[in-house]
Length: 127
Image 1: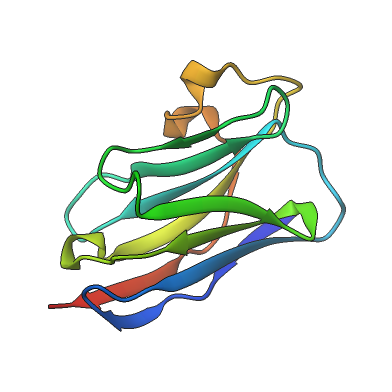
Image 2: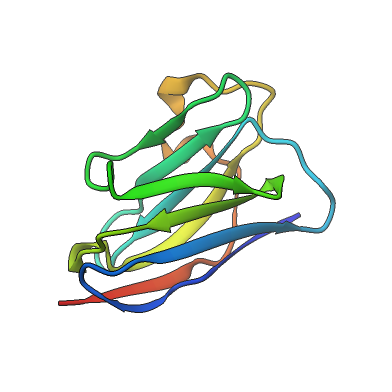
């Protein structure tokens, strides 16, 4: 099973973009999917997550109110709608899967909880 993020690109500040993540190979089961991002010289950081078992969506403070995570067509495809983009959103974005029967809401923020991730997609926001 592989995860593939797509949809990145170059956009002006204030613009919008939508990322998509699809699983290839066998259908898999996860308790949550998330987006993380990594800017040059920085640690990978949590952006948003969606819990399939227990429900709920979760966002970092830096993107809350601007980004929306959602499923697309099937549970193993997840999108990230990004609005009001800022230059500080520039990063490589990764989708990640939390492969567990159940994931507590408090754990979805931590990259160590996620078992699968793929190649990211680059977002560049110009000022």
